[in-house]
Image (tube, rainbow, N blue to C red; front, side, top):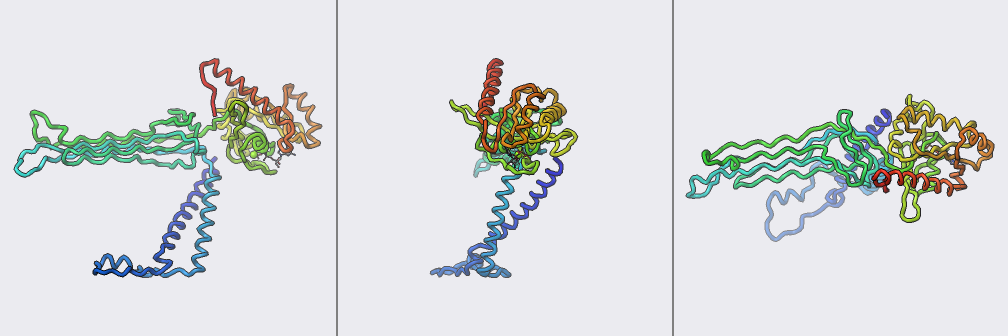
Length: 424
Ligand SMILES: Nc1nc2c(ncn2[C@@H]2O[C@H](COP(=O)(O)OP(=O)(O)OP(=O)(O)O)[C@@H](O)[C@H]2O)c(=O)[nH]1
Ligand SMILES: [Mg+2]
């Protein structure tokens, strides 16, 4: 995780730079710099400030057409890079400092009116500070848009004439479905449904104006109180992908190819290991509007729990999956060892994880060496194996049917316990 975070931090600095450059470029493309603008003729004389507005700033030259075209090209390139950056940037952990808005101060003043000497206190209360709230948004797919610090909006100070300050607006932080909120190692919120909200930091209460302290024994109080500071918390946000099925397998086993074949998801597919660097979720549609979400998890190798390969941190994304698909590359010698290694790595990550309802998917049956390995795999595992080819689409129906069987069993178990099954 550390090098990935380091890389993303570097990318951010680069793009912040690009952002500044882009802004300054646009500033350079102001009409005033492209075409000399003449002050429109006026009938009446104009003031000095008005005249100064139409003067060219000293040191600013007109841009030549060649430079302008070059700048526009660079601008387009920057936009393209930014778009790519947004697309590829996946973050599943964030440490965030959240501060609620400060309350506004109460005012201390007295009513003032001609021929009314003792108008009485009329200092209004300050407004309350705004809360900072985490809200689940289905459009957000990772924690990359979450910043490291949030400061809530402060309430306005109270005013004279008994005017109360306006309360600070609520600041919403949009987080993806499946965000776990931790504070000091303790889970404080589990945002696993769309629309779930959690108050991350409370805004401070507004102060009282001197009008509040008016009493029979004190007709002219001067006391007013300052607003309270907002709550401050350090929260750790962890993303755990929520899907019905999680695909686990060695790199190059064909997990992404399989997800592409059964759903509309488009994870990258290539013949080198660790093509997938972040989880992808695809939706498989069935009759009766039933949708089963399948997550493609980056490849896991033997020793992942000792941080080999991409490590086992990505296994947190299958913690929430209700059932698993072990994807095996059947063209490799002794393919059953892949299943054993995967189960071992799951156990090392979390006890009992490999015992979840699962199916074994043997991929690449279109290759000649795979045909030879199939009987050996069946003998060693002693359980049903779904044999298919993600490339040619051979026997995909069996996988789809088995997915439905797994889902039905899960839904029945949930309903039996009085819970609603997860709906995508
Ligand atoms: N012949 C054959 N090749 C396949 C099949 N499925 C996948 N491949 C190929 O295997 C290679 C790896 O496929 P991916 O889908 O990227 O594998 P992956 O498991 O997602 O790999 P990582 O993302 O690295 O974990 C690609 O070159 C695919 O074209 C198949 O059924 N038959
Ligand atoms: Mg992949």
